[in-house]
Length: 82
Image (tube, rainbow, N blue to C red; front, side, top):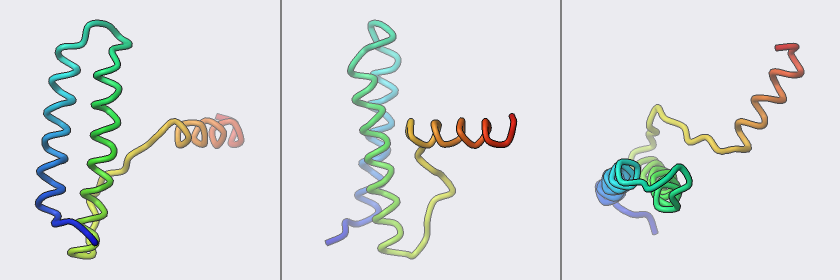
């Protein structure tokens, strides 16, 4: 069962608002609230992207990168001599 993309979009916007609140109210660089909000944005985005695709066959022009993507990019740079 897929969810309505409008509902998923509302959840994504809410996740962005929570991330902003956590980032602007952080107590230190390792504040767990910021990390939690960060992952909530990523998860909410993926849910929205899935719902959008299920309803319309379309994607957003955005990608979510994780640490594994960064590691692969670093390996590619080393392989190409950069």
